[in-house]
Length: 241
Image (tube, rainbow, N blue to C red; front, side):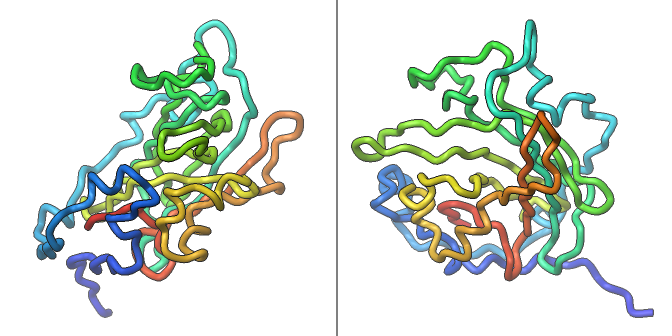
């Protein structure tokens, strides 16, 4: 039997990722580095990560409809998002920690710095977390977020999106990005998404409507698979590594 030795992860191809300096996305001008990036060899620190246990999670951690509800249910369109997390070779990634956070149905975050006129929903917290199972599968339930205006240029709006952070079996496999929704007309005009180099790469950030898993008279469903590195990688917006 051939023994497979788990070594360093394949390096990301930075040419595939958005450039750090993209003037159309105005805040990147201040955040982009002034000097060339330095490639650093991976050590044991980068190829190891915490081991998460299902015992740490509550029954409502992956249900954003119920986990902050106090005296009623949150307002908005109920949706389910599910998919698989796979590594660079297409293998399932089990026990990966997926954390999500988002605006509510009116496009407002539960954050003191968000002063958008959208109404805060007292029954919606906007964050949740879950582990992938043995097959790399995850699922969560939430309210579809609303779009909102932002101060990039005059009258620009962000498409509806959900932020996510994923920690797999190595720190160098951590991914922080955003998912969008199929059919959103704001996607093509979003300055942030325009920094992603190709149409194919942008498609990797769009959750697809999954009508076969709609819940009758309750929820629509979207499928969003996450690929860590490799040819079908889910991209990190304005990645600097």
